[in-house]
Length: 356
Image (tube, rainbow, N blue to C red; front, side, top):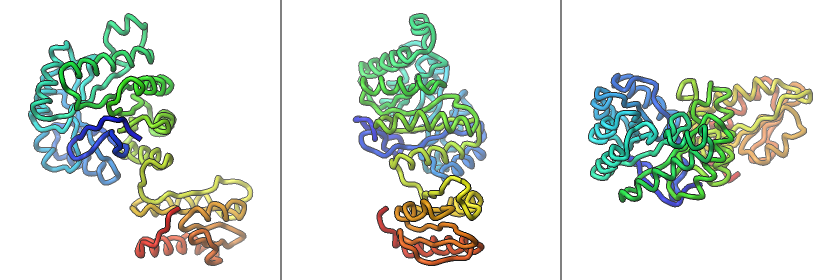
C-alpha cells in the first residue's frame, strides 16, 4: 500500500512499496532536550517510527543536534510562519522538515528552503491544512473545500518540480473526515508522491481514534497512504496504539499478538469481558504475532479458534483450551487465564507458530 515514488527520511523508506509508517509528534518543548529525548524514546518503545518536533524559534533549532544524537528514529522539524527556522533546522541536521505553504510566506522563501534542502539532501513534507489555506483559494472557494485543498497541494507539487526537487511527501489534512477521504482520493489520482495521512484536530482519544480509523481505513483499503499520524488530544502513546491497530486490522502491518474475543451477550457462561481485557493487557508487551481467541461460549468458539494459534472458550464453570484450532484440554474456569498464558509463553519460547 504505497505511492509509486519513494523517499527516504533518515533510515526509513516511505512510499514506493515500503510498509506504511507510523508517526507522532512530541508534546515537550523542543528546547527541553532531556524531556524531549525521554518522550521520543518512550514513543519509540511502543512503535513510533518517525517523530516530529516543533521548531518555533532559534533556541528550538539549536536543540536539534543534541536531541538527534540521543535518538534512533528519524526526526522531522515542524515549521510554521518563519522560513528561517526551516533553514536552521536543515542546517541542524533534521532528517526532514514540514512546512505549510499557506503560512510560510512567498514563493521566494519556499524556493530558498528548497535550495537548502537540496544541498543537505533533506526531505520535505508539504503540509496543506484546511485551517491555513492560501487567501486566494479561500476567496475562490469560500471555505476549505476538498477542491481547495487539492488545488493547494497540486500548486506546490508543480512548484517543487519546477525547482527540480522531488524529495518530498504531501499531507492534506482537514478536521472533517469526509473532506479528508475525498481530498486524498482526488489527490492520489494527480500525483505519485508519498502521502501522509492525518485528520487534523481529530479530538480526544475516543472520538479522535474513531474519526482517524474511519478516514485511514477507507483510504488505506484503497491503497492510498504511506505514513499516518493519529492526531489525538491525549498522551501521544495512544496515537501509536491506535495507528498500530488500524494497520493490523487491514493486514498491512504485524505488531505482536492479535486478541480475538466475542462480544458480551447472554450466551456467555464466563465473564468474557474481564477475561478478554485481562488477556489483552497481559500480552500487550509481546512481539510475536500470535492470534489469540477468547470466547465466552461454544457457539463461535470452534470457528474462531480454528483461525487462532491458541484460544479458550468458556462453559459452565469450565472451558476448553484450543491449540492451532484443535481442542487440547478441558480447564476449570478459575484456571483459564493462567493456562492460556502458560500456553502463550510456551509458543513464544519455541516459536512454533504456523501461518494463520
